[in-house]
Image (cartoon, rainbow over all chains, first blue to last red; front, side, top):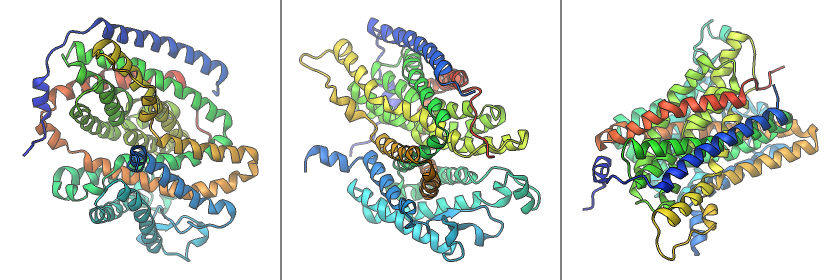
Length: 52
Length: 483
């Protein structure tokens, strides 16, 4: 009978992989874009949708 | 039958749309002057049990007893959900039996939560119940539903398994969200400026969840916990975006083995319960002067649709009670919940796009396979379809009420009925979340390392960044006050 794999067994089987340059780019560009867009949205919401 | 038609009929998302729309259309009778569903049961604050449940239409009080209304409501909901469950492949005998137990236990919790000494929060009401109250409002019933579900899920596993066929928290909450569309449409028409401001601020949630949370969690999981890409990406989506559906969409996008997002999802559900139990009370204690910050925070910090919207509902009632007690301000009900829902839905609708972006990156740069291409139609496949039902009901009522503001009163009589169903589906969600949250099994599975990433990310920065961004966008924004 097939048994359901346990999380701990699956995690033990996991092999370490080097972080690729494309992954670093993904993380860095996401953060840069995210912070930039948040700044823009704060300005837009305070300028055009201020309800205070 | 074609594949697309089969998947349509087997989709919880589409059945949430069908069910929500059907109940909405039946409730629309009240709009036309033919109240078809006035007899639907609604829990009331009570001192003696005979007053605990009443028909939602005030005109039927005394003509239809609470018990009759409750049984009729059960028959209606069992009937309409059974069609969906049957189409989705449920074993009907087990579904009907399971749903019956879940329905009545959930309603028992709702009734207990509405007991006067538990729920009353206005001075006049408290006087009626002997001068003291826990001031939890009727939403205490949700907390009791969750607690009872957790007890059964963790200490009575055989009963939990027997109820399993009808334990569908995602379906229940998605149906509740579709129904909420009508109510929010009416509220938006009555408070256009505030609604527009809340909607626009919803964009901040997309940026925060996908570009900031995801990147940070992915990096921490890869760099400091040594997770492989196959594990780190679904884990980042599960923790950052929308729990179960995001983990599954990401798993599909990067071609992870199916077991990976399933395991991540089980962890997400457990942590959503922990957040659901803690965060609304923290918000009540520290954020009652900034209700909308608290509401947005629930949408940004609590994962899974059920957990987030449920937290929003509890936060709405707890903060209204606290604001009335401490400041003498009575905020209108539902605007905090509207904010939480908007934030969560904005996060949800981007899942398909994010899964597409990840698929392109994985396909083009990480797991390159000759001839493999990612099709844009994947965005539609991953799109949470229940959002369409929510949007349709929202637009219909917003349009009707904006065209003729005199119709707002009639629209509110419709939403009184849809809200009775929504409350019921909320409570069913709470109970079902408890049932599926098997802490013991996950512990035995050895979740340590996975849970460590979750705890560090959640309590290390997700909650705090969520709070900071909520503050940045929503501080000073207040719900309307009852005049």
